[in-house]
Amino acid sequence: MSDISDSFADHLKSGRVIGFAHRGAALEHTENSMAAFARAFELGFRFLETDIRASRDGTPWVFHDETLLRLADDPRRMRELSDRDLASIRVRGGHAILRLSELFEAFPGACFNLDIKSDLALEPMARVISAYNMQRRVLIGSFSDKRISMLNRLLGGNICRGVGTGNALRFHIGARLRLPQFFGAHAVQLPISHKGIRLITPASISYAHRLGLRVHVWTINHAPVMHALFDMGVDGIMSDDPALLKQVMQERGIW
Image (cartoon, rainbow, N blue to C red; front, side):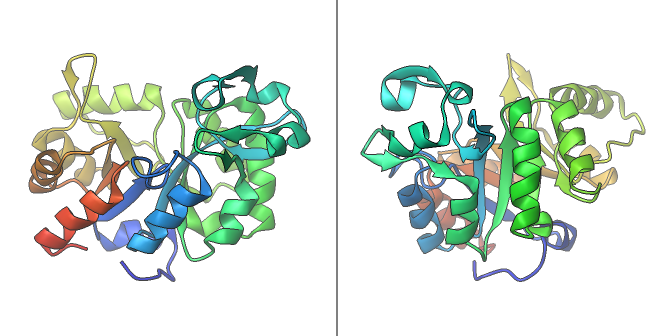
């Protein structure tokens, strides 16, 4: 993939398949680290997926978990820590935790799939996205439909967005019953299955397309599964192994 000059919405409308680097090249480097994102960008990925939480000071940081326990052996919660605290902490591999602003500055030619992990992150995210004029280069996701809607309103109501858990359930039921529905979203981003229930099928993909929604699947790290999903017609795959995803997309002539 070369540098992209169009917006996230333009790319979705084009029908081109998207390869997402999930938390950067998270199998090669510590997830959500500058090294992980730099590796994905070096491979040619221009769609970077990540997670956003807020510090006690109201700054958006690039981090998935509620606490630092898994990556830094530190039980404190992100929301309890100041910016100064977070800047001093190193996660596994000696990597610094990134501010969202640092990610925007490092990769101005990328688009970002941002997963809102807490209510506290909403206004800080809106401020930074606006300050860096990134409204056209982000797609907002969350398990919470309320968070997606709130951030969309904070940013003027014209942001690319996915669906939260409630709307994902509504989508699944609608796909099974072939119900006419409207989601006010641009994409459904789902795992292949959840609690033994298959979410990604040829029928659900066809249903999404009839509703004008793109289908992105997470998190896929095995080539045969990637091929099977592309055979079904998905519009994008998120992977911790962007090198493998690139290889599969090149083999299929869709890179």
